[in-house]
Image (cartoon, rainbow, N blue to C red; front, side, top):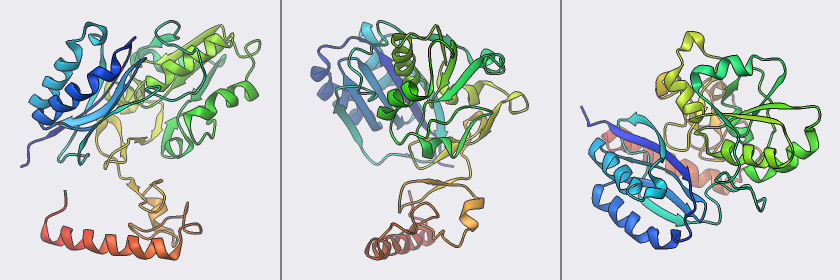
Length: 300
């Protein structure tokens, strides 16, 4: 049996005015350890997901945390039988998660963290507005019961959505969640700056909730979208049953794959009308090569 690959989602907000100087040493250390994935560096901190052996992940986390500004780095782990990433990238960015609102700084102002064990009680309070801060295709795969879906295509749209649909005078208690917790830190900082009295967010995000909360006690419905070959994860962070459409990148649930609009590796109900015949032809050839590789036991 192949050695289990550790997948670590990590982030930390911290003042890093020298973030550019960290790019090359961080990439070199990852390559030395056989760690793959993508890490983002910005003046406000670090964010990313990487995969590797147990020893490799432990070593790269220790390397990052050796900088005292990143000593409190948060990370969540799951496991895979193969690397979900092909290569290692360390990118420089203006923001480690792009909200696009100047002055929003979780290092200065942030909402109240709520542990997964206390989350159910909070979102069951009828006075609390529960907002999913993720994008529409992520929400479509799964979300918390009775959560508000902003129907955003990118996190940049979140501030405008809040300003159009909510009012600090009426919506005094707000609870937010996202995949790993990072978007909520930015979103909570933004909403506090807009005058909301009580802003809460799920510590560690959905991933930590699915890890800690038992299925029979859970208020989560569906799978949690993740940005790698697993597509979605379930309770205990086991791999879900959804697949990714190569035509548009939208997650496709098992029941949606029964649709006549679904063609494996080519298109689905979300893109069948918009994908050109030329692109479909290329994707069919790609799928043909993948099928041949599967037959030879070469995939992954």
